[in-house]
Image (cartoon, rainbow, N blue to C red):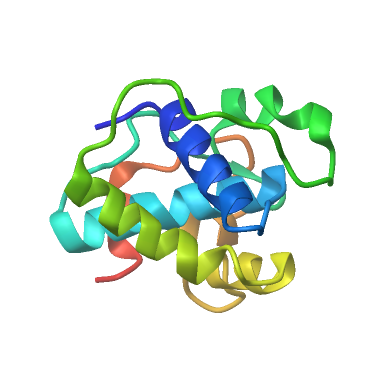
Length: 141
């Protein structure tokens, strides 16, 4: 398991290197998709930090506020420097980033929090509450 900041740095650097920098909101949504993919495919968490329900979907609050200064602009000039990510983990992360980073923000948001089904805690309107690990797992069961 990794800290959200570590995965975020990796994702941001990858997106910038791929000439597709992303915003803070997109980052949060992609991190959630990574967590969801790890749960689905490996029955394990990738990110140790808790996700909470925010107005725009799942969010790791301390990470969101860390990058808040970018506003709605793409986050650039980030260098991955917080440790290593195992090769197998990078392959799964890279696949999710490739799939999700090309989506327009509103399409990505509807994938993460569809209006019917999907993230039950968002549908319940419990903003700023931790999304239980079990709720994320229910999304694909």
